[in-house]
Length: 188
Length: 180
Image (cartoon, rainbow over all chains, first blue to last red; front, top):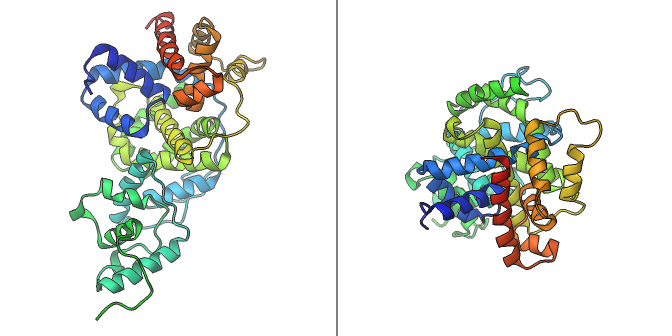
């Protein structure tokens, strides 16, 4: 699509801000906007014109569990006492794989393909079983004890193959159902 | 609010550098308003909570993309929340029951007792009032509730083609009226 055509660009910028674009078209448009200052300025213009409708919304404090979930997904907890009104989840040490999860989860939001693990503990068990079948003896140490409710099915979109830790690849296999999981022992 | 707005760019810069404390403060400062926006579109608290969670995880991952030249922090955050909420609704293929009408929402802004009506909102409302009834509703149904053109057509009982043409004409008029 030629985003450089002025009238088309103007219409698409308005569509984007009104929320009329389907998800894929929006992602394409956002990529185009990143390198097109005119498009970005049109979007900024419409966003600011409609912004008073959002500014007038009555603020309502979300329940603390929302922050707890965000905190769990994006990384280590905030120091206790630094979030007035919001009880932080327990403090964790920084571990690099969470960064990947944060990225993937962000993509999950953008892609809106949500996979909510019905039971994180059970999912971890499934991953362990899969690792056993594949003979991966070294994966468990680097894997999270509980897989958060991230968009597993979108992981392949955001993380290059070579950067995926094994637990993540296992999760992908599970989510794509390439390998139907059974509880049978691994073949010898 | 202006005090808050002056703090947000710095919080965003630090969030983009992976400063979790700044991210927490950003959440603390903006989540009330953003939850209100999510609630307006989702219509259900549990969905709005999910939307807010997804949106802030996205903010953490995409904070580096924020460019202050292209708009305020709050506008950027609202855009993410709105798109998350819209995606959720379309993914579920269900619309919440009991939405207020766009007219109700607009009227509530100027209802007696509200003291936080900004000059910008009054100007926007005045310009929206200059539009014909159906096109005004179409604009508001899209922006306030994230309805698609097809859904707007069904809601207003008019052809989709009419929605397409009237929406764009209305936006052009709105732009001229707001003088930008």
